[in-house]
Image 1 (tube, rainbow, N blue to C red):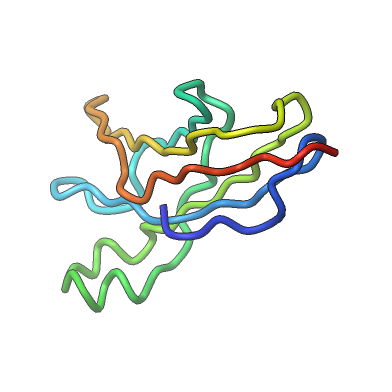
Image 2 (image 1 turned 135 degrees about the vertical axis):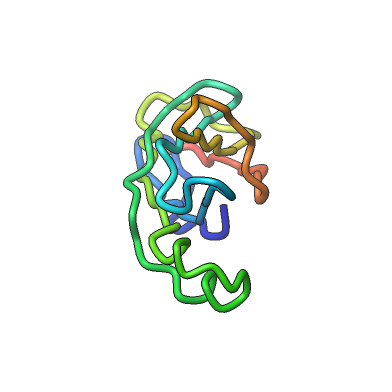
Length: 108
């Protein structure tokens, strides 16, 4: 996870994004789940082009490694929360992506 955009406020939403790729299958991965306090709150939209990932990795098959999601904070209480993401490959193996964040949700 490399981007969190928006104001974290009860009743609002935030947009997050990042990248995930599989050493065997390339990209996109099978699925990315976004978790808030260890509960799945969204599934990422997969397949965004990430030329920066290709440049750093040298893997052309990782071009569509980008993902994005919008997280509703409609029922989230104000206070401290943990935001993370998990990627799944075609075999169902999962890994927690780097870039987990602590966020502070403000009242309405």
